Length: 270
Image: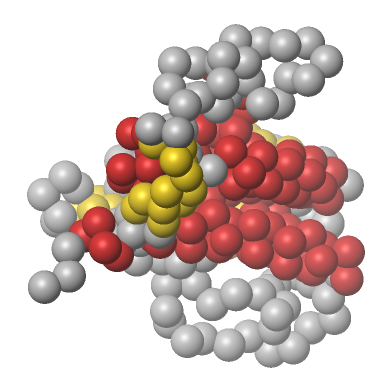
């Protein structure tokens, strides 16, 4: 019978003066961590206990992953200059839906390809190290980056392979910067809306319940408006669709809702 340890990726560590191959769980226990953070050559900083990184770099790693998740939807929008998703955009949630081919922004496409590769290489190594891990149902790049940022930064910072930590860190630093620059070529405008998310979420008991997030309107540089949830990056719909749903839920739209509809759907001054 195969044990979990036999399924784990193996790493070279020194035990009793001899170099041996051990599965991830045992290799991590035998790893000797340097006193200084691996990302501070010029200005040395003390690493956190049992980690390759100092506390500031651990938070920087988390922030870089969060930025990939945050800006991924913006790059999806920027991929097709005319608006909408281009045919090269990834399928989300396993729906199998395809969108009509549209001209794409080559620079944005290259950045998205690099981000997708970096995130999936990181996830792939995680699954090799921890075969029992279950991925989110949605395998989109933004969702996986958010998943890594929320739950697996410590795994990265304490990995027995310092080369892996370095490679992930440098890749994410470059990609997060490129994504920020591409997303803000035409800076979006965010406006809070007094409304709730209309999507469903999974609670701690595994039940599908109404999402408790609040929503805000994002106006892209080309004039397109989307409504975003404050809790889940996948809860994101065109403004006209959200206002139509809100109208059906509220038989007598209040004055604030009518003002927002005029501002974002007609271009008239509120």
